[in-house]
Image (cartoon, rainbow, N blue to C red; front, side, top):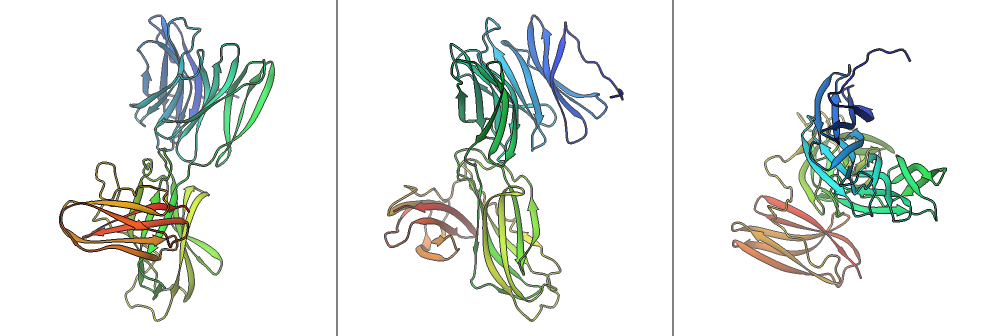
Length: 422
């Protein structure tokens, strides 16, 4: 408990810190409020490892605010939780989430005031999917009720709850994560300590791999190709880790790990044409190639296929398990450059329409694949002029389940997912 160093901050009547957390660079993120021009003003400050200020941001506009909590986010930025009040300061009309960049620039702000008057929030955490959970209370007219707000990584509200406890008021002051989709929250109910265990369905990524050929026979030093698909099937922004490897003789060998992919928009798919090299010293035998997505090491979804390494080895072949990505074409399906529209309806029974647009004339193939990567139908094949086309897929003779439709137009390829429910 001996003091190693001490810093004092402040330039107004009084300044208060409500929260401190050490950051990845060894410094600190501090949040609280300053009494300025007759109002409390929320502030957030970043310091280095010795407490010297790196940057400082204060909310100067009315109504009065203060921050109760600030933490570093998985993208290197910061999130601050605060209270807003208008008019009489006893009426807390809502609380705020404010997202900051690593350099202290405000990225977005969200206000949650749908609850009755006198709301406050005390603690928050970032969830494995990149979103946030904040806890506090809402005043229901007679008593305080413990409250919780869940958002995606852009601060958009996913759901919120109030937890009444009979005739006594309740509040939540702290929350911790105990498993990928389980949380423990603590506060008070009446005059007693209160502990809650919470659960929610996971907002989960999905991963698929569609191979070019089956069976896959590859020589040591050779390679095989496949289409990789990373999807966000939810209605919220989502961030996930991705790791890929092989299982040989019952053991998993990780080949590649991608931490925190770029955030996926709701219902967005990323597709990439990938080439997996097999080193020239790879043992002959059967392998399972497998991809996982989720919040490492917790797995949300996985996909796999088998391949066999056969003799002889290739001369001057690949030396290691390098995974190569086709970088010449961007296969990200965005809202501003949609080449292949989502099928409608989806889910469907037993027909659905698939619409696509061609910016120029080209050779087109539109195929349907099952979850095993097998092509089960071919809907389009041949030359098409520039324009919009709609094709009906009749799945009357197919079993319920998930299918993929892949459009190849010239040198570009797009894949999307659909669900057949009977």
